[in-house]
Length: 290
Image (cartoon, rainbow, N blue to C red; front, side, top):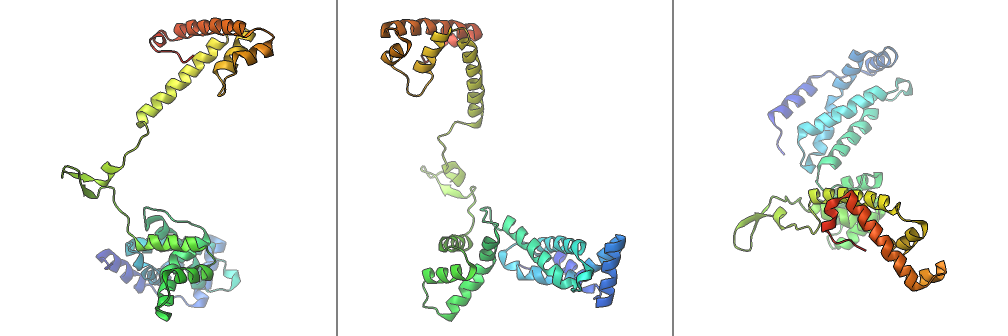
């Protein structure tokens, strides 16, 4: 990816910033930490923009805009400046390098593909090292099969063979747009999106179904309150369970004949029908599921 005029401007600006001697860097870091001197923090960050540029150029192979990589790296640089402890006697560039790299890698993982990969440390190591390790192994012995190369990489990075194979497939392929034109059956132009059919109801139909279901459940609860204890027990056992009880089973349980159970059930259903019709007159137009 070629550098744009904006990229060249940022690079030129970064290269124009003066280097910091160790003593000056330490003094600025102490002023920032102890006195909350924003100017001191900014001077440290600006002096290390070269580090951001250099690291961004190493990640250009992922096809993302250099300017975006630099911006993400600068965010990591500011984070490093905010967290830097001058008392550890470590040069700021050594400490900042980790934050800059981590910020760029997170950005790449978020934007490299519309298909997201894992974000664990092992998955990140696999994502950013697979191509390099694959090329190195293939160069060392071009007789190695893909399976052998994948196994070597899995062992080197401490990940599973399936993870390596899956990541290699992702890195080797390109994202396909759902707007990609395809030939229709009648020769008419259509898009990939048009070929994806779903058997599910439309979103508005799903919402309507949920609302109607909640309304009917509420009506049914109110109607059930009109039944006496034995009627309610029979309806629940016969009609409101997955495996409805038989007339014989309920008769034995209640100590009555199965014909009596049937009579009580019929009477209870009539009560429910009247109660539901009172709640929703339109319901009488539908066949009740009893």
